[in-house]
Length: 241
Image (cartoon, rainbow, N blue to C red; front, side):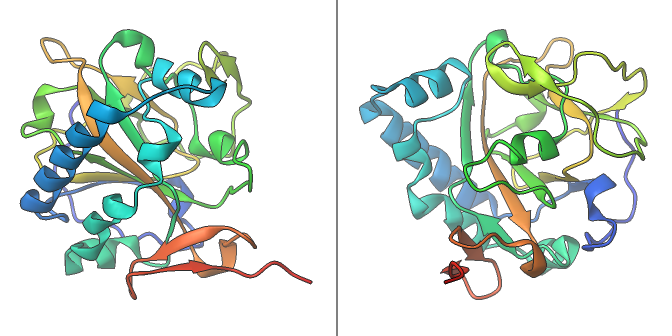
């Protein structure tokens, strides 16, 4: 089903992991167009040479070199006040982001919770939310994210699934929800919300998007780089000596 509009709920540290929201118009369209043009430019010279980059490209993701470019954080420098209010306690964006350029169904991410992928990070994170930003001119014509509707439980067991390090293989979600997105919109959701890549009927598989993970001040990891959406500065919590 396609979700109807409702008032946005602020993402607080105590209960943000089970929420999902369609945040309308929280990023300026011209900024996202500029980032899409930058992605096209970088893609022309992108080279996947090592095993990690080759695996990423096979999943519809960009190489580490592209992801490390700090230009993607221009989106956060232009976040609207409504967007900032929505994010609540989550103000530290994990660096680098995920930059995705899907072109075929083999790039579909299976049903999963982001807590499972957070645990696979070199510096694991569990208490996080994701901000998914499509950068196509008409996102509603392209593949998107589908959520399990009203899921209110803890982490589900994940298994390696195809090209991906984690997926839900033995749990069925019969009641699902999608949103009709416009350029400038985002989907914001907690690490316990089950979701998957989905292309609605008569829509296009191909999609370019940016995916950022955010944590609260209390859930930063020592030695990890973050972008502070309030100060617009990159910060790192020092390692304990």
